[in-house]
Image (cartoon, rainbow, N blue to C red; front, side):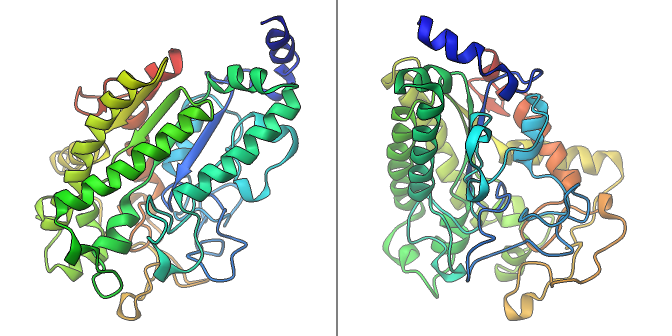
Amino acid sequence: MVLVLFFVTNLQPFIDATSQVPCYFIFGDSEFDCGNNNGFTKASKSNYPPYGIDFPDGPTGRFTNGRTQADLIGQFLGFDNFIPPFANTSGQDILKGVNYASGGGGILNETGKTLGDRISMDMQLQNHETTIKGISNLLGSSGAAESYLASCIYLVGMGSNDYINNYLLPESYNSSQLYTPNMYATILAQNYAQQLRTLYNFGARKVAIVGLGLIGCALPEIVLHDTNIFTCAGNCVTKDAEVFNIQLKSLVDQLNNDLLNANFIYINVSGITTTYLAADAKSGVTLKYGPCCNTDLIVGRAECIPNSVPCSNRTMYKFWDAFHTTEVVNILLAKGMYNAQTPFDAYPFDIVRLALL
């Protein structure tokens, strides 16, 4: 204990003085990616204009015009700087946290293969293991690292691609022919449970699991399934994903009951989004569906066309490109994720309370 206190005391210059936790680790897909795909030859990328037009550092690999939900939660937690990507993080910087998220990544390793290179959840865990070894070296022992990591926040948001770029893509995958929505959700949840247990074994004790959003409201899904923006929340695509969300909530209880000192929480993003959409309609100021930047869905391009000129009134759009939300929407969602406005937004509690444990 004396050894741990010694190292933590001497780490103060490397920890943000105002942060609520010493470090923050992020796992996920393109919603949270901040540049891990940039070095890939063939991958879903966003490190070019007009991406990042409202971000301080310009195009960095974030799939939006400004900050991601993960960025914003980091700011709410009090971090002075954005958590950097694993692809170019080293030295003392790893003590504040690392972002492992990758556009196209999924719970299943085969998910997203049509998008090219990507980092699946299993691979992100392997990268995190590398980080832990680095932290152990910096702190002097694995025991010191274990005590340090137990106080950190872990944000994990996986599963959207396992639907959009797997189950709902029958021309490339046969998963929808092999499994009913219930069966597929169970397979995903079982794989995810093992991955989250691995994360726990690596030292994580404060883990926020982000559920799937209303993926049926993404523009390509609306076009593909011939629905509209008024009924997207209730279409078959969203219902398939909701089956998985129900299992996630049960998984939280299972993990907390089975694992000593574990504090897993479930963030109901689809519920937060529904609340936001209702408030948006009630206010009389309805954000446009967009996309704000120019895409070419006819040839299957969901990302912004490089160097194209986006809309000027970006605070009036829900979607930045065909799939990803604008910063103004990310702010609303991240606020609900961090500090739940209703009892349905987070279970058993929200991120702000998780940080206080």
